[in-house]
Length: 350
Figure: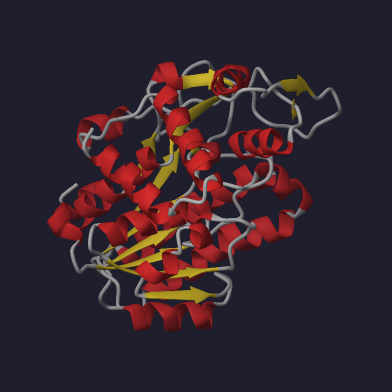
């Protein structure tokens, strides 16, 4: 990334109160960008947004629903952004089984609203729409999924994100390309890092169990996922945004940002590594019936490697170390904005 590119540039981030949205908003502010956020209230207590006092580093923070087109349009017109990063979503697979209508409404209609609102703002040059690695029709293949593979989804979350990809392609072809607005979608792996307190995510569940002095109950220890530190895909999103503005339509496509092949590991491997790091931690198998989840999922990032010169910087072990370190320093009462910025700057120097 070119730090000078971001200095004083107006960036509009939806979902800035969430885990990934918080990290990218903090990173952008540290680069000197003028960051405007639009999101619901933080989804958990505690949360990254509050613990880092992120609002103090932003130009504006609008707490509103992505499905409220009028408010969204007003916020965009007020911010006058150059770049839009769309992260607002219902991001949990198991939650989507409980709230399928909310999941489709947020992830599909929310994306439509965002892209429709963009059409009325003449300052926007590029949009990066964050979807998910789960947007692919999972065939339980051993090989990694490529950007050209078929979209689909067994669960409502995965299906909604596949739909959001189709919406993205439609708006690119029908409206935005001819208006000179470059639109790309990005698909990342299972991100980990400090400041994530979501339910039904492996690392937050593990840390909650440790803090409570309990054993963690695990439903699918053999499931393989593309684990990566949150800063890995975020670096790809920012790099891609630069290319969209500077070089244009050639980069207005779908992109994978996944870990090295060797870092796609089973859940049990992650837990065993964490138990080595955290005294007294342990896990047990949950044998109760569970809703469907894919057993194998890996991403092919050759396109990002070759065309964007992007590659992962931190190994899986380093990502786990940084996550546990963040959580420990939070428990010690340190300034989590300073801790997070130190991790960002350490990542930049790799």
